[in-house]
Image 1 (cartoon, rainbow over the protein chains, first blue to last red):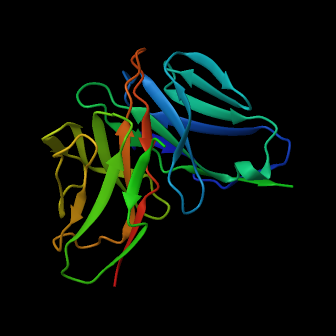
Image 2 (image 1 turned 135 degrees about the vertical axis):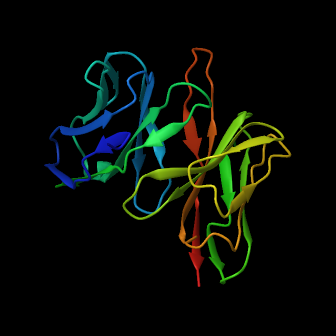
Length: 112
Length: 115
């Protein structure tokens, strides 16, 4: 089992809709979770971090964390074509040297 | 203007050559990382450093070397021993906030191609 799993997509949503991106992880004691957005040919950009169970909202983005079920999700409300990118889920492994494990990413396509 | 810079943006290497990728940050971050990204894949950790003059191997360190002589700089050398070096190389540094957050930020990347 991969340490961080994401559906590779593409996830296609119409403009204005809610895009829902999901991620599961295997390390039961991980405490820190991150979502990065990566445009084609560019480096990843941190858009959300979440550390506690529940929801965290920032503008059109909401991160949801459920540690018992070992999943973290990202909701993008009022999706725009400029949101079209690959979204990487990252989990900070417990213990040691703060190692981030990345999923392979979900490609999101928002069509007008 | 604070941030993480990487150079060059594009790099071409001939077979058997060593090349060095530069990474500099002026964010006063202690920890720095090097990742490799291949098409359609997630990021894989090559090396990391938590303090000056100290660094550890990541998951795919074979064929790579690093140094950390200054807090601001963490160069990566891709040696001839790395058999498949064509990839997108990303440097990152880590912020540890007062709340204990451990957010990691990336530079713009270097795209290395072996000719």
